[in-house]
Length: 158
Image 1: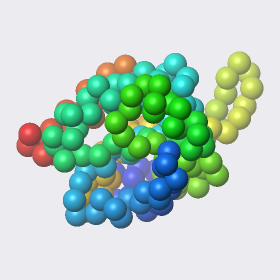
Image 2: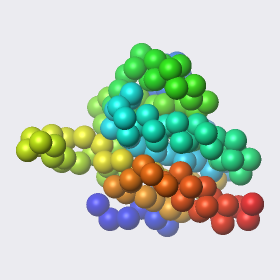
Image 3: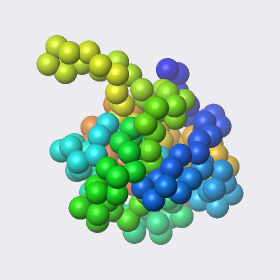
Image 4: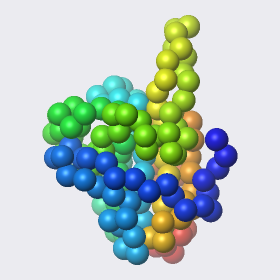
């Protein structure tokens, strides 16, 4: 997949943990969107990443940004994960991985010699005009949230 930086972000409409439809268009002209794709609720790396976003939530909010997580998990799984970890942001359901494919993060993965399709941990920073201003692919959880915050601060002059 080629980079999406500088391009219009692929539009999406997905259900969140409450069954409400959330669309990229909801934030057009209003907010920056931190759209992060992760493999699975309640797994060690995904929990660390979600909690890191949770712990920096106020910093992102103060710079006019909304955080949205996306995984193939269903609403019930997202609700349980949000409640257990105290997440202050929505998690979106991409069970058929349509949006993950649009963003080029649905990939062939290997673990213990087994090949399978899954989400490659990735984050996209989308500005209020709907343009992808930064993307991080093959994200390593440690230090990632700080890097995203630094990039957003530079963009917003915060």
